[in-house]
Length: 199
Length: 156
Image 1 (spheres, rainbow over the protein chains, first blue to last red):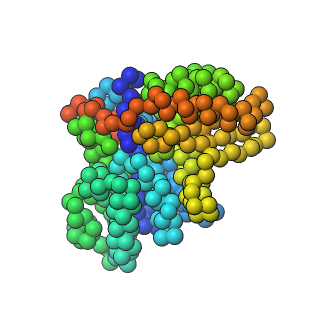
Image 2: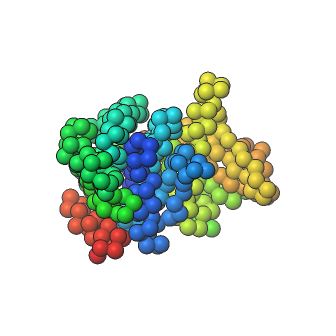
Image 3: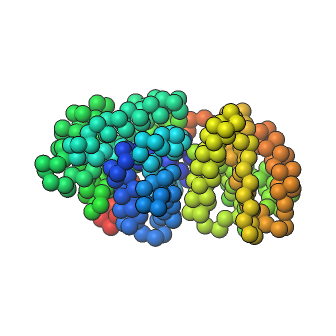
């Protein structure tokens, strides 16, 4: 649920990075955190295990500045990707205004991607949300790995992107594709607000 | 300290609660972590982080309550060496909100719980139905968005 305050001209939106374990969701947030100037970001909070696997979520608030006269803030969350954190994923997804699905481009991870994508749709449905109506962007991460290990963007699109949503190849560790993904989901979420389609 | 509200109807109940319960910090939020009004935080980024964490505590303790007791816990209390927090749901016509409050030795859990009940009743009376936002942004907002993002990422 985007929060729009007409009196103070402020908009706050929640974006959730979703996907299978080790696909690079936290890496996306780390890269964004490293790029955004200090006065435009809050503290990055990671509720992680001792081995740095996301236990509950990562959280990064960023300030997009003024858009159409509204001070616009995004709260970026990741979910834990491991299968046994299903309940936690559902909780973090609550109230999401937009979702970035981070897929692992490695051929051997295809089934995990498909299962996680189905899990996303199932959790949205459990929240009473029509998955087709939620702004969604797909990122195919780890495209920097050797070509014989990864699937190309068009092949992955064929397997996962049946809705034809914006999709991007990425190397979240080094940056390519991270900005484009964030820009695309920001645009989709804000476009809903420009048409009054919030909630 | 200043009272900061995102929704006007939050202001009076929150101010009354802070005064009466002698709380140090109080935040009313949506269960998704969105701030509706706060008192006590100096930096707005600290508020959103606190709300994200509080929403997570509430969500996970609710699930834990369902697991062990068949229903969510009504509220949570943690006591630190000098400060304590109390987190509890506030039922309104359109769902549930959360109040997170921090207090020290100037107050007590009993006092906070006592005035929380009054706060919850006040909020339930004045909370409007959440509705779809009217078209908030201009149709051609993309130019500003792209410019702001490019500046943030050093591409401006």
